[in-house]
Image (cartoon, rainbow, N blue to C red):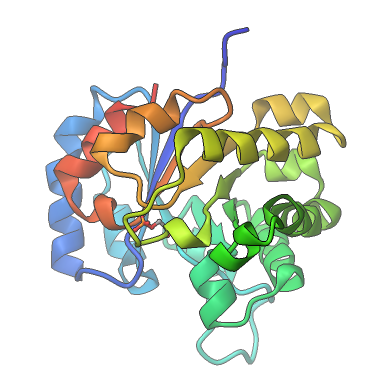
Length: 251
Ligand code: PGA
């Protein structure tokens, strides 16, 4: 059967660039947008979101890279979901492995962040993925299932499908060592089956993104897999030409 999910490709700039380089990126990318059939999201450092959302051409959504799980209040340094909406964000990444590992965000916090995002009308890109040690110990399926279940238990399948689910093997992030298309597809199909066990209609509509060293040279092969509906792109998203080529590979 034809896959009727619209592909989604999200840039994750992480803590890179400047206000000027971000605006220049948007200006250079805008003329390339019309030829693309996928949805495009640019997740930028929070201090630049307002400027970028004001400058973004039609068809380029702006997203944040993290959000507080809390309502506004006395939480120094945090940014509430409502604040992200106010500055023009439509999306937010939650549960990226860099936040899980460097900021100690566990499954419960990630689920609470997804819930806070949804409540404010933001679409979460929920990230799951195993470490190399977990893969080598044969725990990949158990780890991603646990990470996914925490979010499904908290928000439900239908709400998750307003956003997207990203499979990002930790060993493939920023390492140049991408999962093979078959390795990625195997996990994606397991993730979709797990959502389908709760709600098959939602599972069929949910966009599953692959992330981890996606480049122009490997994107088409990854995106050709039945359960890969786009990507979450780190390093290669900083270069407009590379990101545009990756988007062009997503149909
Ligand atoms: P990468 O990062 O493309 O640089 O591997 C992907 C991500 O962390 O989202």
